[in-house]
Image: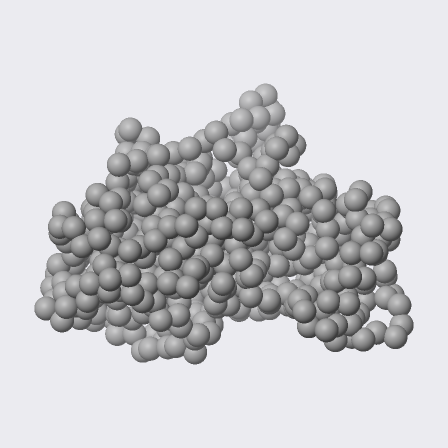
Length: 242
Length: 291
């Protein structure tokens, strides 16, 4: 009994000390992080947030999209022009199009297109950082940073900060290069912002509720949802697209 | 898919701000491969326990920041200038210990570069840099419970190092970065990598076979710098293992997650295969030539 009391006292002191000195507290990887980082994941839905089945379906569709993006007048025009060019194959809106300025290699999908492409990905957690590995390279999400920098050079994967709110991992990304498409045929401006809400909805399934906002391209934030299935035993693979 | 059976006996041996102009001038004599790579299956259950929470915090703190090659260092052969190599001037200060056959291959590649033939700047083409070329770019270390990710700031490539005690698979899918396993030798991180494709570079103008085996011994020095000792071995190519050291300096001021991809760089190739830089509209800025 005395020994048990001693252990309880130690535990109380430990908690009190950690709270008094947050920098000395040890961040324990949550069970969710351990669970999510095991194996890899792949999206269940297709590459069009708006609901088209594939690029051919989009280019030749007779019916409107089931979840059409709320485009501004300016970007409705841009989408129509891009659609017309893609239809006559003057340009390609295929996600694996070769890099026009590079001469070889494939363009990265960028965010948020990478969230809906069927590339397996893997979560990797460490204190203050979440990394998502895939054949597209890696995404870094800083979880010990409260705000984006005032200025950041636009990149394909943007600048991401994240945090856990209960069982939901929230990721906020800005600084996205306008060389990418939100989905095939849908360009965006440098004001694109993508906020993700990752949650586990089943032992082998994740859900990501994504809010896409772009004051130049969209009249209001566009909400889309994706689910991901666990791929047991699959390991990270290298990008072969050259 | 490129594969080869890997023989354990091959491995049984004991093995300064970055010069961006130098890095961007690395030449590849490359027949761009079209092989697809597949994930390497595990062949043995993990034998090393996952890191404790405290150890995770400690390691990521000790190895945190972005590590940039200390200025003044060039490639492994220590060429003072890439143009010395491609211009045919002099010899490498730290030449690789090549077999007779590979010395001929190396000299032939250099001769072609001097003539301006058959060379392409891989940074323009965004072909994966591969390891060890990727080690010339700044990189970060992320230690997880059972692995290490080395994240490149040259492009969005990463090296995934298994730290759970597993060995290399018997059958390897060949990749640009190879298959890496790591362990701790006291305070030294030891990474063992095999399974390379043969269409990347070990060093300036120096190609290799699929038998290349690289061991890195990494240690954080008292000066707060990172020392990496590379040992390159390839029984067909080197008469004995080639050992080279590198020093990296820690950069902590950069707190962004926005690492660039090669495609963020605006380079293109002209008719001769030389790289030219483009402005934001795609027009050539300043033509460069290897001639």
